[in-house]
Image (cartoon, rainbow over all chains, first blue to last red; front, side, top):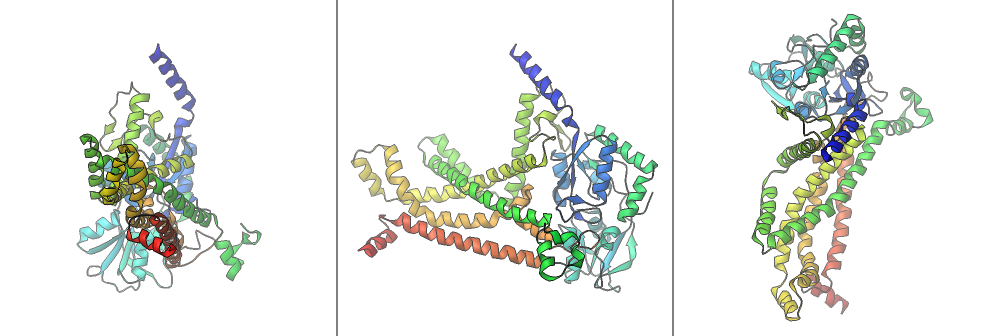
Length: 236
Length: 294
């Protein structure tokens, strides 16, 4: 009898939660303009904010935004603190072993270098990159000297104050930091396989929903409009 | 916030600054000072309680309790803070969810660990995914308090344990001779005298605790250092009404002033407490007070 009551109680409880169950928590970094950043009001803003909100509308999900530092963004996904990563994360094999990705929402885009002058020698210099990014891995693979920082802001600051000779990052991000002091090098690197939403491997249902929503945005051209608006990558 | 702030690009000087410093983001920055102070206000007494409990347990004559007390002190003091903060909080959070999962979803057949994923049923999530963001933040804040209290409690336990040993044995023997039972001796003789020996060590801990608050960000609580870094970073005119260069130095300077001011006030308060606790004690400080009163 007791278990019967308990069972009914749980059923009733889950019943009332049926609506709320579709709340999806989106984790982002909030420090990587124009992809994601905090606006003056302190809210998550940028290309991925607009994209994420649109995807959630199309997939009929209620979404909530959470910020998390880049370093621990994957562990916090797998332990369930949020349900999806939408943080300009390139789809790579290493990451794919731990988490799952949706289809890419931006095509692979080159990474660029920014330095104080154009005549910097990359092979013998020190190159800054954000820790655990495809760029940091790329520099290490080349056998060059890499210096890693926790946030994108610090990688650029390291070039300004002479700690590093150049910084390697997504071109769209570096476009926003170039000024009268910093210049972008001609050379660029084609690394990464496009940017997608990161999800837990067990969360196939959510992945399918987001996949369908991304596909529908690709089909009707709204994704291209959004990419052009925020200047994050080339278009589909 | 102010009516003239609608178009910041036309503003200059003080009026620009007043608008800049009153953006929503800055409000969050100011609020985070409150978060840090609240954390300290709750953590300090909790850690003291943990410390007292640990010290009493370590001194207990009942062997398992004593082992527990000594084990707590030795393990927590020996593990690096950062490792403890990263590991323990995740373990604690998952432990809570695992327990709730066992109670609430007994019919669940899928494994909880799938590869690197930690999966419990939806109603066992802590807090529920559907809860608003502030519930998640408060939950994270309490986890932080508990973690800080456990870490600093272990250090406090060691200080208090030493202080209890430092109370002159003659005092306790005299208490016994007057017919006080062990419990009365503890409450009336040992505990009051212990504080004056423990205070220098505890005041050290308090200072370290103040400076350890930036560890909060490891736990996902947005503290003053996080906001200073975020606000001070270069801001491009494309994404903000208040573009500026790398101003992190100024924000960190403000934090420096805050921390120095706060530790200064703490020192003043602690020295008053030291005087108050030395009154009537059989120590050098207590003797000096007695002579001064003359």
